[in-house]
Amino acid sequence: MSEAAPFDVAIVGGGPVGACLGALLARSARRARVVLLEPQVPPPPAAGAPPDTRVVAISRASERVLRVAGAWPQIAGPRVCAYEHMRVWHESASAQGPGALVFDAADVGEPNLGYILENRLLQTSLLGAFTAAGGELQPTPLGALRIGEDRVVIETARAVLEARLVVGADGAQSALRQAAGLSAEVSDYRETAIVGTVATERPHEHTAWQRFMRDGTLAFLPLFDGTSSIVWSADEAVAARLVAADAADFARELDRASDLALGATRLVGERASFGLRRLAAPRYIARRVALVGDAAHVVHPLAGQGVNLGLLDAAALAQLVAAGLAAGEDPGSLALLRAYERWRKSEVAIMAAAIDSFDRLLSHGTGPLARLAQHGLGWVNRSQELRRFFIRRALGMSGELPQAAAR
Ligand SMILES: Cc1cc2nc3c(=O)[nH]c(=O)nc-3n(C[C@H](O)[C@H](O)[C@H](O)COP(=O)(O)OP(=O)(O)OC[C@H]3O[C@@H](n4cnc5c(N)ncnc54)[C@H](O)[C@@H]3O)c2cc1C
Image (cartoon, rainbow, N blue to C red; front, side):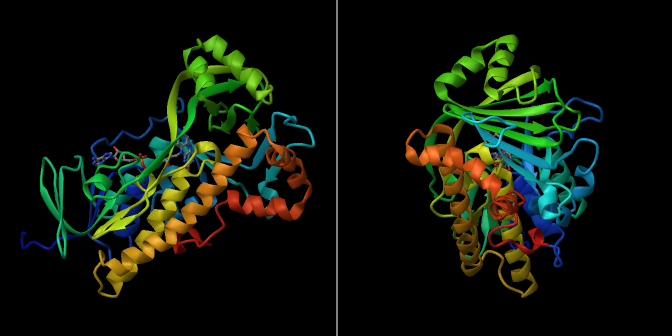
């Protein structure tokens, strides 16, 4: 192994989670030395361009992490839509009726519940914050990995790099996870998520709308230009029909499924579809290795939590590594990595279980428990206490938060 001082941390994957971890570390008090490998750096969205097809809902807790990471000034601008209300209902009720569950930011004294923004804006703002803080971005994929006693050696097509800790932030198919010998438990939801941008007859009212149906879940997320992004998670057979439908037929199906909550819809631009799988890595760590974001866990998109969970992984790991470096400790020590795994694995497990029960009971359930849950939306709405409980969850203000995410 070479004698040059290794990086404190090497991050494989510069999606939103890896880029956020890099920015947090590079901006930490000790200014960690960080290298990040990302082979596909997209350009930022162009001013005035229509919204990208891929958008994401981020919580207020994530907003705080993004501020600490130095990315918020680039994000907060004309391409972000704050949402102030959520309206959730089951197909057995109506969007405007007493069976719908309504969350208002004002109920908890907040200006909004979170934001809808393009994945690309999130990623490029974070990569910009990372390099502005002195982080080294290498536009190349992981080649080979060797894990030694006191450092890891990473080979790419361009260089041989050494680091005290390597972090896998390279998504669900993580090459780093495989190279480090970590496994992943994967199960198929037998559902496909179809996403696209739609113009709606009525304004979105800065509201996230979500309808649970027996064969899936349909969400309308408000966008900055007045259109809405749909995320329609449908059982495979239904999804196959929807993907094959032409734009006019698709809009007709959408109007039926939305119960015209926002009036008639018109598809603007392309649809994209994603097969949905749940993924859980039984171990988030190995010697000098940690996994964050989708490399460690993939959840159903119905609650819009994937990136939010990953940003909290990044904030938790950055906090532990920064504290370790400040105390003169090894950032890849097993004690530090164990603390990270204990913290984040339990938080993710709680959220993943809650999301799966929503999917099972509200979208697909037919038994007495499912009927109870479906009617329960209206009951929750009538209890201030319960509503506040769910709003705090939506804001990302539950569980053991890293310092960057806490108020
Ligand atoms: C339909 C849909 C809707 C969603 N909506 C939401 C939402 O509203 N809110 C939310 O919080 N989440 C949402 N999610 C989940 C969210 O998209 C993911 O959780 C998030 O993208 C994970 O980020 P990540 O950085 O961990 O991984 P990714 O975004 O997958 O990024 C991984 C990065 O690693 C890079 N990479 C891959 N292989 C290598 C390699 N060998 N070497 C180096 N780099 C590599 C890739 O180029 C990529 O940039 C949704 C998901 C879907 C499918």
